[in-house]
Image 1 (tube, rainbow, N blue to C red):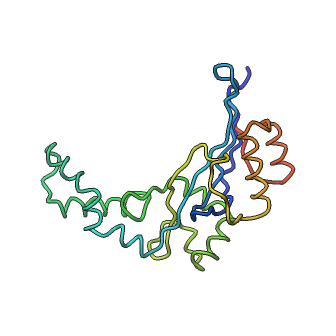
Image 2 (image 1 turned 180 degrees about the vertical axis):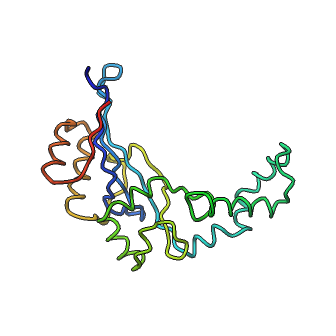
Length: 206
């Protein structure tokens, strides 16, 4: 039976954009024909570094109240809480820190595990953001963390220019992603490139 979709999964950081985002290439995909046209492309994710000072600010009770006080109002109207505003918001903050994946309320920690598994990125991050091996945890309020701020089909002529690449191989990988997104390469050609350059990936067919 012919596979309906092929994915080449990488989850590798490419570098930093003009706006200060860290850009990660998630995977190439080819789903064959859809309504008579090729349905294929590249997905990625973007991250910002969050400093310890910003983490403290974003966990400040008054700041969270200003942004998320409506959650308390909705809970009161629905008869879901008897707590006052301050107690309710503080419980939300504590719940995120103690039981969630983040270190501040509303922290989007998507793909941080993959980011931490990228050894070349971590070497770059420890040199640029904090000379401290604890950064490998990525959820340390005293060192800093990263936050996922976007993702999807983000490799085209409209994307932000890169100001720094993790390595020359990652720069070449970025060029391949843009060529594939533009329809100039096949999924087999991308796979051959990854093998030739020893870039780690996982092929998934389904």
